Amino acid sequence: DQQVKQNSPSLSVQEGRISILNCDYTNSMFDYFLWYKKYPAEGPTFLISISSIKDKNEDGRFTVFLNKSAKHLSLHIVPSQPGDSAVYFCAANSGGSNYKLTFGKGTLLTVNP
Amino acid sequence: EAEVAQSPRYKITEKSQAVAFWCDPISGHATLYWYRQILGQGPELLVQFQDESVVDDSQLPKDRFSAERLKGVDSTLKIQPAELGDSAMYLCASSAGIWGQGPYEQYFGPGTRLTVT
Image (cartoon, rainbow over all chains, first blue to last red; front, side, top):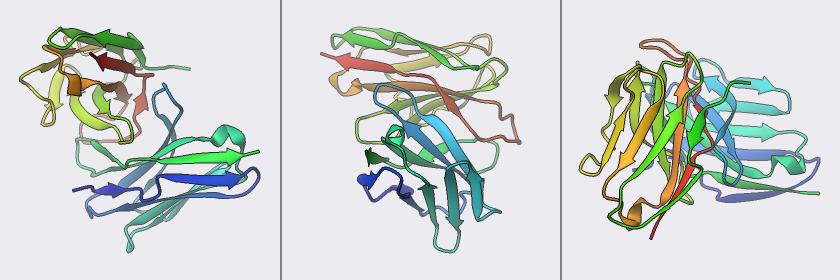
């Protein structure tokens, strides 16, 4: 049973436009959410996070939105750049003292020049 | 900038052989994680250490996998014997979070790509 779902395996966007990556979750105990970017043959790189007490967090070109009632979060990248082309993973933490992250399967973003 | 170090970056081994991976977390990070990532999937937690103690190894195939973090700093993950299905990327991550408190962000190393033939 997949608790964190990224239903779009891939997304293609034109340079300069907005990229929107989506993530849904089923576990209502999740209270902290993170986005990671991964290039081939490298480890995931932390991008941005959001606590469940917020509905938006912004860091430069990256903004994460959280809709708790819908159990949905999204990552917006504006403007998109070719260097943003990578696999993006959504991850969730169920709080407590374990800090265990549950990851989605990832979305491959391709930004075309 | 502090990074998580892993070695080797690539490993090819024959099935039934033993293989070991090493990880050095970011200095001062008490929590260390080993993940396995299969192509097309997200990372899946194998084992989590808080200092030198295992706090979660529920997904570790203990008949063939073992992990240790003897002095609460660097860590080794071992597979013996390796099977064809073990071919994957093995990722190490560390976090500054301590028991009962955040932060939750985990920082990953470059990974070890294992191929079992």
